[in-house]
Length: 146
Image (cartoon, rainbow, N blue to C red; front, side, top):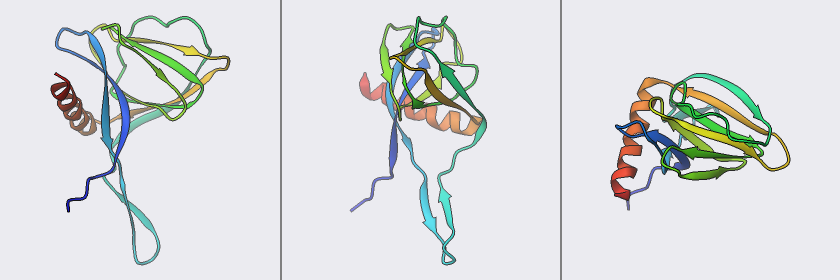
Protein backbone atom coordinates (compact mmCIF):
# COMPACT_ATOMS: atom_id res chain seq x y z
CA UNK A 1 0.00 0.00 0.00
CA UNK A 2 1.39 3.42 -0.98
CA UNK A 3 1.20 6.10 1.68
CA UNK A 4 -0.07 9.48 0.51
CA UNK A 5 2.04 12.46 1.50
CA UNK A 6 0.20 14.82 3.86
CA UNK A 7 -1.15 18.05 2.42
CA UNK A 8 -2.78 21.24 3.63
CA UNK A 9 -5.74 22.76 1.75
CA UNK A 10 -5.35 26.32 0.50
CA UNK A 11 -7.08 28.76 -1.80
CA UNK A 12 -4.87 30.22 -4.52
CA UNK A 13 -5.26 33.47 -6.42
CA UNK A 14 -3.28 33.32 -9.66
CA UNK A 15 -3.13 35.26 -12.92
CA UNK A 16 -3.56 33.70 -16.33
CA UNK A 17 -1.53 34.68 -19.41
CA UNK A 18 -3.85 37.66 -20.02
CA UNK A 19 -3.40 38.91 -16.45
CA UNK A 20 -6.91 38.03 -15.27
CA UNK A 21 -6.86 36.65 -11.75
CA UNK A 22 -8.71 33.48 -10.75
CA UNK A 23 -9.28 31.45 -7.59
CA UNK A 24 -8.64 27.71 -7.28
CA UNK A 25 -8.34 25.24 -4.43
CA UNK A 26 -4.94 23.52 -4.10
CA UNK A 27 -3.33 21.08 -1.71
CA UNK A 28 0.05 22.27 -0.48
CA UNK A 29 2.62 19.76 0.77
CA UNK A 30 2.89 19.48 4.55
CA UNK A 31 6.13 19.01 6.44
CA UNK A 32 6.99 15.65 7.90
CA UNK A 33 8.20 15.57 11.49
CA UNK A 34 10.95 13.17 12.44
CA UNK A 35 12.11 12.59 16.00
CA UNK A 36 15.78 11.73 16.40
CA UNK A 37 17.13 9.26 18.96
CA UNK A 38 17.94 12.19 21.29
CA UNK A 39 14.28 13.28 21.25
CA UNK A 40 14.82 16.39 19.13
CA UNK A 41 12.47 17.04 16.24
CA UNK A 42 13.49 17.86 12.71
CA UNK A 43 11.34 18.45 9.68
CA UNK A 44 11.45 17.33 6.06
CA UNK A 45 9.71 19.27 3.30
CA UNK A 46 10.44 22.71 4.70
CA UNK A 47 9.93 25.57 2.22
CA UNK A 48 11.77 28.86 2.06
CA UNK A 49 10.29 32.10 3.33
CA UNK A 50 11.63 35.56 2.53
CA UNK A 51 9.65 37.77 4.93
CA UNK A 52 6.69 37.86 7.26
CA UNK A 53 4.46 40.45 8.82
CA UNK A 54 1.07 40.93 10.41
CA UNK A 55 -1.83 42.72 8.74
CA UNK A 56 -4.97 43.95 10.46
CA UNK A 57 -8.07 45.09 8.67
CA UNK A 58 -11.38 46.52 9.68
CA UNK A 59 -14.63 45.42 8.06
CA UNK A 60 -15.70 47.61 5.18
CA UNK A 61 -15.55 48.26 1.48
CA UNK A 62 -13.29 46.48 -0.96
CA UNK A 63 -9.74 47.78 -1.21
CA UNK A 64 -8.48 48.79 -4.68
CA UNK A 65 -7.48 46.13 -7.22
CA UNK A 66 -3.83 45.16 -6.84
CA UNK A 67 -1.50 42.30 -7.74
CA UNK A 68 0.38 40.60 -4.94
CA UNK A 69 3.64 42.41 -4.21
CA UNK A 70 5.39 39.03 -4.09
CA UNK A 71 4.42 35.37 -4.15
CA UNK A 72 3.41 34.33 -0.67
CA UNK A 73 0.87 33.11 1.82
CA UNK A 74 -1.77 34.95 3.80
CA UNK A 75 -2.82 32.98 6.88
CA UNK A 76 -6.03 34.16 8.55
CA UNK A 77 -5.46 34.21 12.31
CA UNK A 78 -8.70 35.92 13.35
CA UNK A 79 -11.81 37.39 11.80
CA UNK A 80 -13.19 37.07 8.29
CA UNK A 81 -12.34 38.61 4.96
CA UNK A 82 -13.41 38.11 1.40
CA UNK A 83 -11.19 38.01 -1.67
CA UNK A 84 -12.38 38.74 -5.20
CA UNK A 85 -10.49 37.76 -8.34
CA UNK A 86 -10.64 39.59 -11.67
CA UNK A 87 -12.71 36.66 -13.01
CA UNK A 88 -15.50 37.66 -10.60
CA UNK A 89 -14.96 34.70 -8.26
CA UNK A 90 -15.26 35.51 -4.56
CA UNK A 91 -14.37 33.44 -1.53
CA UNK A 92 -14.70 33.90 2.21
CA UNK A 93 -11.57 33.39 4.29
CA UNK A 94 -12.04 32.64 7.98
CA UNK A 95 -9.78 31.80 10.91
CA UNK A 96 -7.43 29.05 9.77
CA UNK A 97 -7.78 29.76 6.04
CA UNK A 98 -4.66 29.78 3.88
CA UNK A 99 -4.41 31.94 0.75
CA UNK A 100 -1.57 31.31 -1.69
CA UNK A 101 -0.96 34.51 -3.65
CA UNK A 102 0.56 33.97 -7.08
CA UNK A 103 -1.10 36.86 -8.94
CA UNK A 104 2.04 38.99 -9.09
CA UNK A 105 1.13 40.45 -12.50
CA UNK A 106 -2.04 41.65 -14.17
CA UNK A 107 -5.11 43.18 -12.57
CA UNK A 108 -4.65 41.35 -9.30
CA UNK A 109 -7.33 40.92 -6.66
CA UNK A 110 -9.17 42.94 -4.07
CA UNK A 111 -10.35 42.12 -0.58
CA UNK A 112 -12.41 43.42 2.28
CA UNK A 113 -12.88 42.64 5.91
CA UNK A 114 -16.23 41.16 6.97
CA UNK A 115 -18.01 40.63 10.25
CA UNK A 116 -18.10 42.83 13.30
CA UNK A 117 -14.43 42.72 14.28
CA UNK A 118 -11.08 43.39 12.66
CA UNK A 119 -9.29 40.53 10.94
CA UNK A 120 -5.68 39.58 11.64
CA UNK A 121 -3.59 37.95 8.93
CA UNK A 122 0.04 36.93 8.82
CA UNK A 123 1.69 37.41 5.44
CA UNK A 124 4.65 35.20 4.52
CA UNK A 125 6.69 35.78 1.37
CA UNK A 126 7.91 32.56 -0.27
CA UNK A 127 11.22 32.04 -2.05
CA UNK A 128 11.56 31.41 -5.78
CA UNK A 129 12.01 27.63 -5.51
CA UNK A 130 8.80 27.37 -3.48
CA UNK A 131 6.94 29.67 -5.90
CA UNK A 132 7.95 27.47 -8.85
CA UNK A 133 7.03 24.23 -7.06
CA UNK A 134 3.66 25.51 -5.88
CA UNK A 135 2.89 27.11 -9.26
CA UNK A 136 3.20 23.61 -10.72
CA UNK A 137 0.56 22.40 -8.24
CA UNK A 138 -1.72 25.23 -9.35
CA UNK A 139 -1.16 24.38 -13.04
CA UNK A 140 -2.12 20.76 -12.27
CA UNK A 141 -5.27 21.86 -10.41
CA UNK A 142 -6.28 24.15 -13.30
CA UNK A 143 -5.69 21.32 -15.83
CA UNK A 144 -7.75 18.90 -13.72
CA UNK A 145 -10.61 21.41 -13.47
CA UNK A 146 -10.68 21.96 -17.25
